[in-house]
Image (cartoon, rainbow over all chains, first blue to last red; front, side):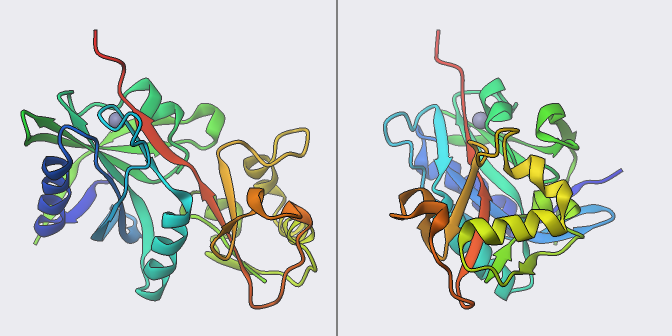
Length: 146
Length: 95
Ligand SMILES: [Zn+2]
């Protein structure tokens, strides 16, 4: 059984990001290392939501931002463990669009419900495969590390 | 040129995070990559041989779709090619 291991400070920072961008969706990347117990997240990197046309219910991270985030991660000996985004006024469950547009198999997608500007439930889902054609989200327990 | 492999494609690339190629163009480098790691092919290309819609390829910091010569662009050993699957999602419209 794997889990998403995440330090309290990083967990708090991604939830705070969702409150700051409310009523728009926030998004960002999670950096860490793969272990037999699941991803161990070390840090989160905020990204801009390029969907300024529909930011209250869409998110998209510019790939060039990921190019740079991946480069910085490598320098620190980290990998992209997954991504996070917020659901303003919606539960912390993945949507069909979230699944259709998720392509990082083996990575975690963390969703925070933001209700009336306050971060509520945060859930993590592992994008399991093995391929794009049979991908699906599996709930991944969140383990807060010190 | 070094090709950076994103986390989800590493299982199909011998667990490597980057692979060195010595091809003269982007297309030739991708050929080299998929001939040494054939399992990568279906993750990167459609059966018709086009790059899959959700796969973004960046030569250094440039989207290759916007390079004048696209995949035929010549590359130098110091260039890097990043494979970046799209990151997006959305909520259903409000009732
Ligand atoms: Zn979502």
